[in-house]
Length: 114
Length: 115
Image 1 (cartoon, rainbow over the protein chains, first blue to last red):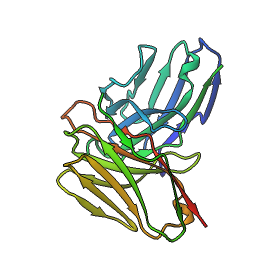
Image 2: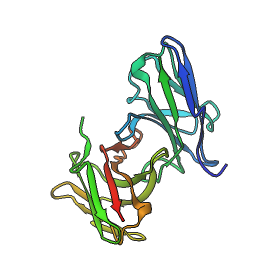
Image 3: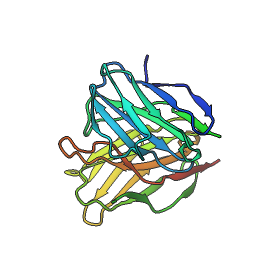
């Protein structure tokens, strides 16, 4: 596709359930980023990959959050045992390669934990 | 940790006027800065970037100014149009050779264009 795509666009889940959020980056983009954005706030960095290698996961809030990009393309952000405080917009971005390159953002997945 | 922030949460300007959105950053080691525009219900959209070895960069109707002495960044939009109404974020990216390479965003300024 022409841009970064994410699925699902909306996810409503019950507290304690696991969720998996998918990101399909722009074809050929080496770097892939995950952010979380609260209403009225700027995106908050979670983690990023170059190819299939997770370069930095310092932004992941706790060990319930994990991400993978096994083939260097599509990535999945998984949240285990969801809590209400996990409710937010989760955004994915990709760039040709890392530093000093424009990051293109996807439309996001709106996660609501009841 | 250190962060990028904005001075004004809301800015209202008349259509056709110029607007200036300001941003202060605290990390003196930052070497790359970006402005993003976010319209309601959409993801952030890149506007313009600037590296720390520059103090000014111009795009189409937009200019970014960087003052490293006072750690200040600004975005100037000329002849504002209704389509410029959005939230604007400044962000910094510090390349650390394999370390954190994500963007650190400020809180955003909501630009409102009055007809």
